[in-house]
Length: 169
Image 1: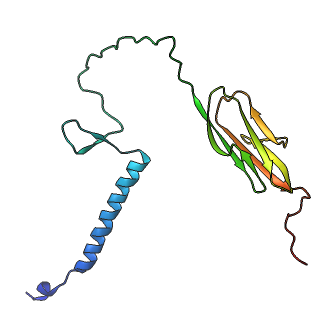
Image 2: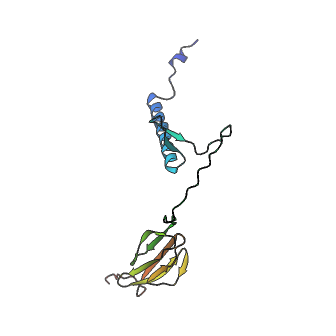
Image 3: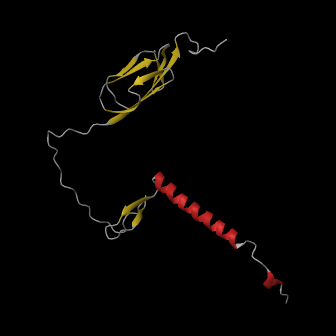
């Protein structure tokens, strides 16, 4: 028998093996972090342990049926207001002016909100879009009874229709 078998070296160096192991470990940690951030992996504190334990998203039914307790009916005092739904009104104002309020505003269902558009000097309201529907340009827009999320886009244009800055000529 030849001594060639004893002299064979591994096809990968130990440095290469270490690098691959480190890369796989880093990817595994990244996958766990992404699962937690996406909400597909949750942790719940165990009452008898300080270690977090994963909570499965889907649980199997118990193998033997358990009797369910019916909770006692609770009475809501007459002076307790019913919870109201909230919606967002998101306003985007283009270059050449501003809107008030701008950005995202939270409102209660049924509220009234008026958004005022203020063009910069030399500009005017050019277009107004509400939830994708084109409206007549105006200096304000009012929603009398908010019943859902609303997106408002307003654009401005120069009064002359030309750029407001002129190059020296």
